[in-house]
Length: 84
Figure 1 (spheres, helix red, strand yellow):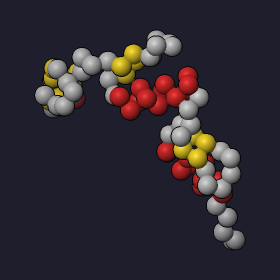
Figure 2 (figure 1 turned 90 degrees about the vertical axis):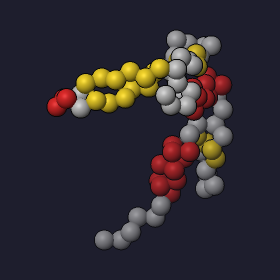
Figure 3 (figure 1 turned 120 degrees about the vertical axis):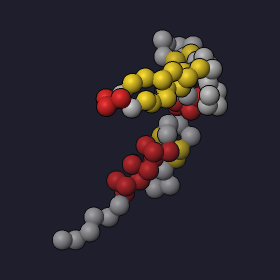
Figure 4 (figure 1 turned 90 degrees about the horizontal axis):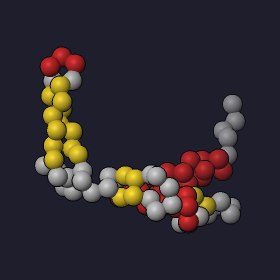
């Protein structure tokens, strides 16, 4: 059993292969909507959509993002296009 999980289910995949599927009893429910997640990071990022928190700031402009990945994608928009 993996960390933070209470049960492991095995399921048969195509070709008779077995794959472990971890099922967590630790759900993180959103107090604002029906969303819930077994992954605390996903829940935290979701909560930011309700609170408006955007902790990742662009060093080039006033943009801020909920996730680091969104900020990285935004920063690429500041890149100078290379001449052909």
